[in-house]
Image (cartoon, rainbow, N blue to C red):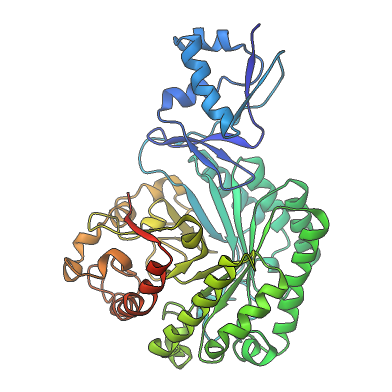
Length: 466
């Protein structure tokens, strides 16, 4: 009896001709396909042709094809039916060259807290101009999809200042892209926010809501976010947690916290509050000293005191994980992640690793369409999607030279014992692109001294990034 293979509705064919993959529009799942020929074979799996017919047209044996498709069945990409079915195959295989895997889009520079946040990296760039029309952003999203991208993240400003976020999210989903993240300050419970949440629940999206909460009480949060913002943001977080529980939805609730002189002495108390709220993840950062934080650097905690607090927090979390006392995961800058405890493994860097392998296949788009290396690097523009198009900007020589730059090109860092952990630091906060990051040097000395021994006692292996 013959069978009829078809691609799951969750997946589309994406990537580039050099790095084809099957990508999910509902969750962060990317399955390499090995070659464009295999991607083209998979594109024939629309449920209306038998395994034998596909094998014949691809000039491969039926057995070899079945073996290939069975592997994809094991990871949910492909399934089989006994009779023909009609099934849409969305193929978004991009051109040869570096793969643009993910794009972070700041869809607006409007923010209702712009006059309050003394640490905002966008700072004076907020509330400066008119937003681009909806259709222009929808066109950009279609262009991103045609590049074979897998994921898109949405932010601002405060993105719920725009009324068309549900329309933008729908366009992302219908083009086979996964909306991995929605960043918000959590103070606006608008109709558009409710529509966005309903869409995410209805389509079973694993999108993460990243909500900015900078303290465990009014005093610590409102000092940098404006009076009354703590209560509104906390209510927003609790509302999302409640909706998730009520509906059985699969989205994630993540709290992003800016650690500063007002709150860093209270991390253990704050940690206990976060666990009670039922969030999925707590992410902490003391921030890159750019934008308004550079103007208000008194908000940056003394680094040695900060690391003492970090060590206590990690110790508490390790004990909770060991006792299965919490489901909440924890990210502390680039120094600690709960996954380290689960996987017993953490990646290190080699000198031939690219300077920012985390963002090697990613870029950011500002509200005016300017393309950046990453969300924080607003001082360097590589082109504009509204005037040049994402394909031309992404493949531009200047951007790709920076994306392919190796750590070994930072001459001051060669041979440094910290290099395997810091990866050369951040090129944004270094004095020049090819000079050492003094802030990273100081922090990773303390990491090696205070945090690394703690992790090693948990039998976490540190292995080179492949």
